[in-house]
Image (cartoon, rainbow, N blue to C red):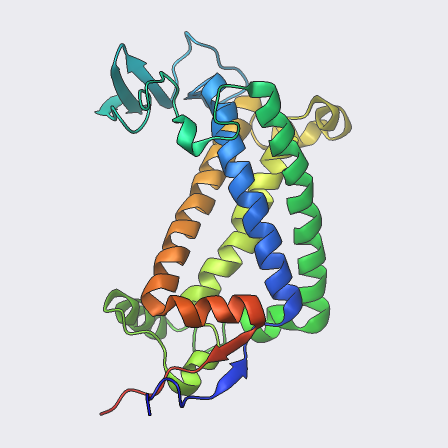
Length: 267
């Protein structure tokens, strides 16, 4: 009999966590794609309170005719066919990555703001559940042993060698998973939401101090972009880890909650 097939099935992920995962995934994907279309309307980022076409941008995605480029801190990198000039368009992000797929700022804002409120509501509900149920303390908080630099270094080295936890160790999230999830929950998503609120004139009137705290509208827009880039990076690494760790087992756990423990490594 196959060793994996004979390994025990455990209930690893409870339904509130699975539900939030899929709502969050849908919301974030639509927000990233509609956000790229919004960025296409003015593909330049600045620091401070003000920013316009003739001001110095720290990031710009544009084109010189048929040649696309990304300019970061004054240094240009050719990106023809990827960014700035791709799929017969002169947009910063090509249509295959955006919602809607043809230029439409108003429609993109509609998609973006609608799913932003879904993201906020689902995040608040999840955090309340995580605190009340003990999920945050039990499953996501690092233990004293896991916080030791030597333990973290070993976990990082194991991941670099694609040696993922097996047997009983696979019942729990590993330290790098915990750090990644806590960073998204405690840093990236709150920053994404707070900076997004500053894009609303209504919220500026209600919470004028928030815009000042973030350094002005253009700084808030830059931070919003950086947080979104961090979320996109997390998703890319997360999907890669799912594939490398065994996509069928990982997807089954996130859909049904049941996870088959990988057998211990033989000496």
